[in-house]
Image (cartoon, rainbow, N blue to C red; front, side):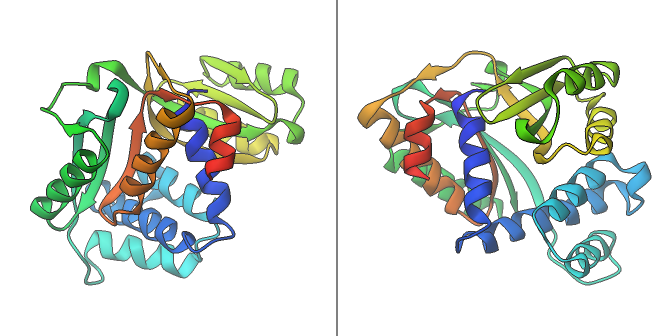
Length: 248
């Protein structure tokens, strides 16, 4: 797993016990609202909404909050009209960034993202400047203690997964966007403990960082993730697990 993906899983685990849980809930609710607004409230007919609701439930977002978010998305309850924007740019040491935003004020959002990148030695770029370095894929992460690896391998491949990547404590399952929903359903039904399941921008090349460079990059990630408009941050850094764990 590239460093930025590992970092995302660590941050989700930490959110379960610290004050950042409120920000995580807010991001998940926003995603549900936008998914319902774009393609309707029928989970069976709206894969993005189905993924958003599943992720929210796995993070213990109350059902009442989920239902209200769907109603706000469909206009049955009054709510904020969010716009989706993806900004591209560079961090220090040539690391590429794709920053997904859901905002009710694009001027505020781009100003904030630009300020954060500049403050940490990066810069915002033109559309397309780094997107070619990433590929949109389905990414499911499960704990390897919760399932037999060989059985999971066969189940995932039979359901349409492209690859399984085991590590010390977890297994990544990678799929195409088209097969993601089918693969996730199969993994859920297997009883495996899912840490994360979402569509992600997977970097095709990575930049290895250690020491001060790694610390500088993680401070930038923290600053971006603290911004209320930022939904997801994708970057192509590769930082050793022990540094990621210590920083989180």
